[in-house]
Image (cartoon, rainbow, N blue to C red; front, top):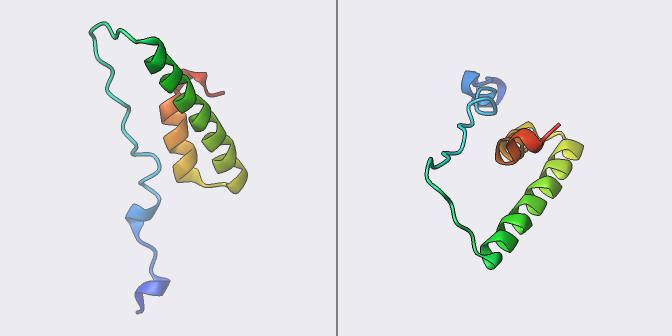
Length: 73
């Protein structure tokens, strides 16, 4: 049978297997420039989550939800 008509079992498992990001137990001092970069990254991730939700891209939704953590509703 052609591979075009065979569904791989691993195909759907990738979305749920995104590992959490590692958080250091040590203090994380941030400069004003670093804080601005963090804020920019959060904004990009929020925008990316909205775009992924509207396009129903489950893998991207999972990635952005992991990045945003408890902030996501």
